[in-house]
Image (tube, rainbow, N blue to C red; front, side):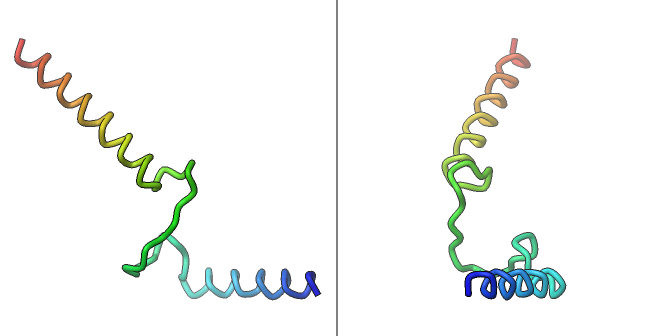
Length: 65
């Protein structure tokens, strides 16, 4: 039974890829849950934004000198 479900799921995944239903082409406003280590996770994005902001401030201070 488990083998049958896995086979059906693999066929469904292949069909979704052929139809273009992949996360990169997602056009839905429904919320998506990302893994903690995924770069798209809100915590990871916030950390990246903070690092970019800090780097931009450092650059602007260097230009002012």
